[in-house]
Image 1 (tube, rainbow, N blue to C red):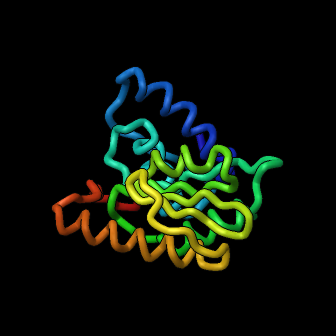
Image 2 (tube, rainbow, N blue to C red):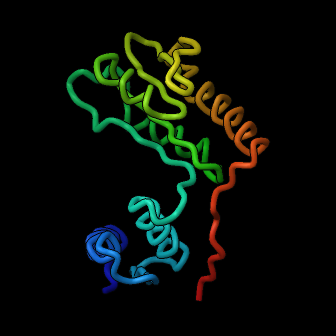
Length: 166
């Protein structure tokens, strides 16, 4: 069922998620009142969320709460934009406090726990450095590129499908 991008995405995710998680179906077609490329992106994200397709870049971030000491929304958007097009299965955590942030950042391939004007940068569960808040995005992008190069050298692929838009 087509719908505006936001509503159609929710409807598609709920419907396909229920069916595919039960093993029903092997082809999906997302219909949105949006450009066809957006339909493809939504379909790929649904499959990745259900672990039916190897993940590419995944950004996780906290929903922000009273403990957040940084603008998590802005930070997550900047990191997402800076890593756009990355094709390796990399999980990046962007967290806004030092309470829950370190745990989530440790679980990711790369992460930051922000607070008090700085960010602790984690790679594969270990703190590798602490940077000023103004350098968080730049540092995460640099570290993500290093990880991506290593993954590509190790032969890790994105599982990129052949996608055609009609």
